[in-house]
Amino acid sequence: MAIETKKRRKRRERPSPWQRTQKRLKIIRSSLTKSDAEIGKLFGVTRAAIYELRMRYGIPKVRSNTQHKTRLMNLMRRLPPDLTIGDAAERLKLTEQRAYYYGKSAGYRFKRKKGKHERADYWNARFKSLKPGLTLREVAKELKISYIYAIQLCQKHRYKTRWTGSSRPPRLPFRLRRTY
Image 1 (tube, rainbow, N blue to C red):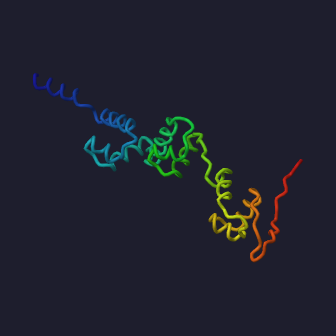
Image 2 (image 1 turned 90 degrees about the vertical axis):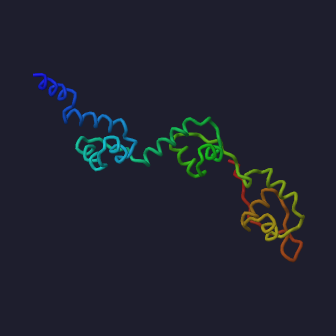
Image 3 (image 1 turned 90 degrees about the horizontal axis):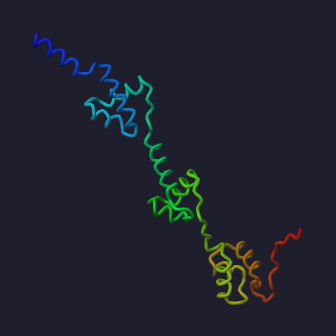
């Protein structure tokens, strides 16, 4: 009799195969961020066995790229407001393009820093440093910009250029200001 009770106790202590499977499924559901191989090491089974359990019981796998994206989006949301793209990229250790992509996806509003070519004070200083009476080609070469952009900037900053080989001012196409 004593032997039979010990066997019964062992049976009660040892979970049934279905209970064991339920415990495994619970662990699989709680650790979807881990790979099937890592979960398999917990149980001492292959990754194929974990994959089969996931498929049989309809447990979706969270892909690594999705995990990466959600992690970066959460990091973007935690950043202080009004950072420039460069500052955000530096803090997250990403390129500026990646920081901009994840920031836009997360709804982050970046503080825009104008480039040097968009600032009027930059071009005013550059045109003051030029010698008077240069040709358009010389202005473009000196400022390291295209010929067409040199025309536009010369008109905007009222820099007088000359024709090549003469002192006559060039006929430049000009933009009319709309007054309506």
